[in-house]
Image 1 (spheres, rainbow, N blue to C red):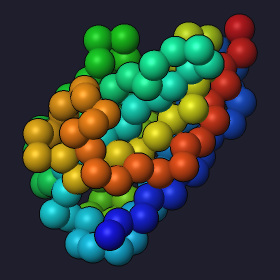
Image 2: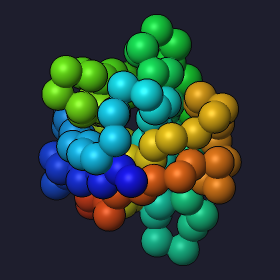
Image 3: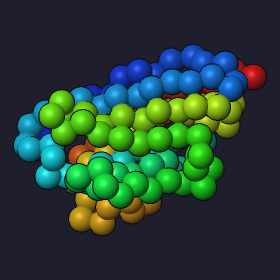
Length: 124
């Protein structure tokens, strides 16, 4: 079993930056590809970014490409999501997800573990 706990969410002005973290505990974190998803009110959960076990390959939704960066520190069992040039449409609850056999897959049902989410609000 793997437990995921997100942190770093909050309120940021449009154009600002925020860094999300996801503390992982339980089984060996470095064994798992990880991703970030987000869900806005009234909308379905959507893929934001994904990273392979080693961090060599990264995947991004078109809506965040060039603005967000996913990374991981396997020594700390923590993936990160650096959010730059934030837009009001980035407002959502952000979730960390792990253990997929298809790195970077945008399908939520492909992930075994989920965090509880952290709220990100971007004001205009």
